Image (cartoon, rainbow, N blue to C red; front, side, top):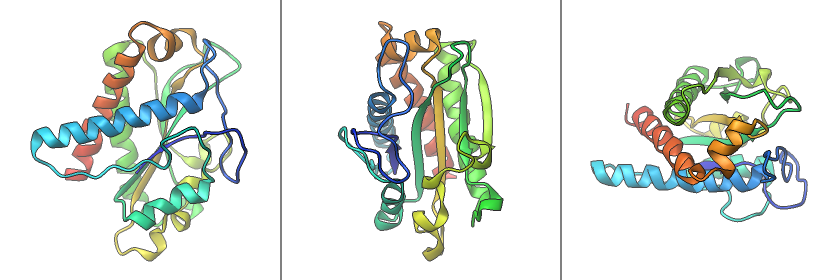
Amino acid sequence: MIDPGHGGTVKLPGSAPNNATSVSGVAEKVLTLDFGFCLRDALVAQAARTGERITVALTRETDVNVAGAARAALVGALGARAFLSLHFNGAADPAVRGSETFYRAAEKGNVNPAPDIAFAGAVQAGLMAGMRAIDPAAKDRGVKPDSQSGPGGIGVLNDAALGNLRRPRPAVAALAELEFITHPRVDRLLVSGAAAQANRQAVAGRMAEAIRGYLSA
């Protein structure tokens, strides 16, 4: 289950329409949806080439907002094995950049912290491999519990909302902050430059490889 963050124009519980806006004026919600499609297509194409079976769903496929609990609930409803929420970061300081991945903190009631940490680690490794392939100066901000996120907790990673309290094998979940689109170089690389679309596809491809590796293992 891929969750392109934000969307639409209406604020809903656990989900704002948009947070960050790139240097070139593109909304985060537009980029998360595009990247979600890139990641879905990469997962399906790679699995087809290797004879694997994979089903990929998105929490949204258009410019609509979906409440945080409703996004997470789709995991349990569809029996997904893994949930990845996609976001782009923003900062008042245009020099700030880097990629990071969050998992549910143990003190927040995580019922499967070790698998979540392993999944977040795989996501972050794939993300950094992709980013460094297009920019050797890409910064790794690491894998972190959601207690270290800006809001101090991430609702879509809540195990109760994900349906994990009712499953013998809980789904793993993570949220990736792919990069700071308020950084001029990041904007050129991933948003407004001539190679931006190809770069997003390249990063998504490396993330797909890492996710498939985790699921296969």
